[in-house]
Image 1 (cartoon, rainbow, N blue to C red):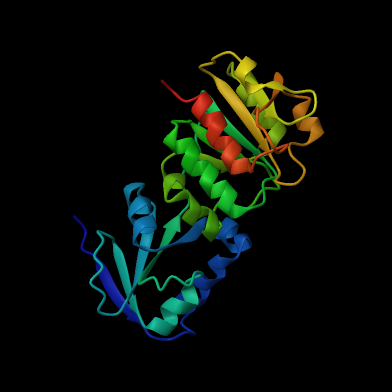
Image 2 (image 1 turned 180 degrees about the horizontal axis):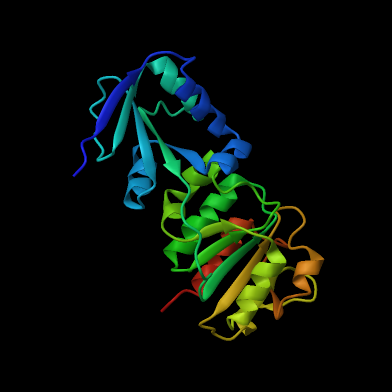
Length: 249
């Protein structure tokens, strides 16, 4: 068993603090393979997944986690690292999770979804209904965006979530025998008419534009959720209905 290393940082201009602050930007998260997780609950979930490299806490904080490196900082330093106004007493530097060898038999494909709250909620929903993976398209919100992590409630650490071009991801699903279901209003069939399937990939589209037409053309069927009063639902709400419909028994 290795001993935990503990040290203090008091300066806002410390090189480590400056490099960790850069992780607020997606460019640096992609370059380094690191991201920040803020708050006790999110850190606990990241620890379960074995992703925490360094724990950063307020000096004399009673917070205890089983980590290799603990850095104690002033309120000013912690405030610089935090991106929320929740008065968190801790933040963790985490490494990116491994990419899966296979997407699995139940897959959510997110085509250019931009709202981080929607994406985080979708990931949490996918995990809750035992979907195997979530794939974000090349122009979706960055998957380590702080609001995505927070909205997922840590579910993002417990199922494969990855960023990949849509067409190759769809082709992989097809080769693995998954039924490809797009979502949309035009040339669609009611969700209730789709038979049960053990292996399914569901494509959800951009909040304003929906799924791109060139992606819909690759689908085995396009489905719509039968509703009254409005044409469409919020994408995260629609995701919940679709995931429940194709949940594992």
